[in-house]
Image (tube, rainbow, N blue to C red; front, top):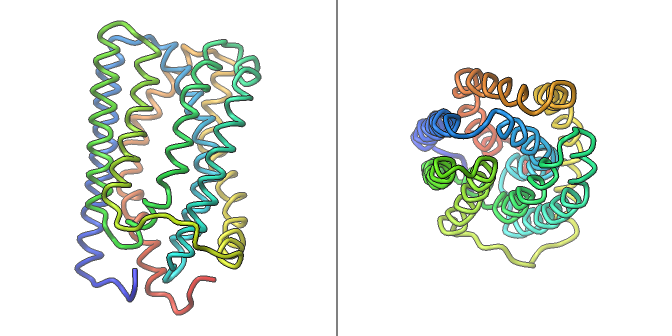
Length: 282
């Protein structure tokens, strides 16, 4: 985004960010409450710990690069290309690594189905690698309406598939397909709605600038993720999948009620402050 955002643009962005957060949390909770009538607690527990592993790669590695680019004042197309290529590479490497480590993780947690689940939902890391930079571009341009519609449509698509399969008795497979369909739908919407298109035109200085600031985010995100999500891992390790499913259900409801406002405000604050900064963020 060139220049400073207007007060009106920031205000509209904040409203749409709140709609995005509220609708996202609300739809996720609604889909969960419906599928919970047809899917076992054990299946929810397996899905919870599998998503935990995927989100660890996504939040610590992939999202760190996106945040670093968002914090730049006026990134150029070369900066966006550097971010896209870096994240795409990390997404493929993370997905491949998770595919290989699926069985060891399943053995550690004592449940074979975790391995099969991880090998399928590692596809989410590929969609993140292909679309994270597009999300940054829309965020930098204060286009939170598009991001909100992305969340609503993808959650509805994934939720519809998940509920249909759950009613038909597919159990864990219903939860897996819900996540995959939602991720691919979100990716397609981001590519369609974003005017910027990735290319190979970039330089080492753009990549190095991205890496320079991302490295400070890795440790911060890792410690934050461990502090907020390690309970699900230990629940699965010590108590088993069924207990983890029940525990994670309660946790999701609490987080949906407590994090809606802060998530919306934080998503608007970073690109706004970056645009108002006195330096170019390098």
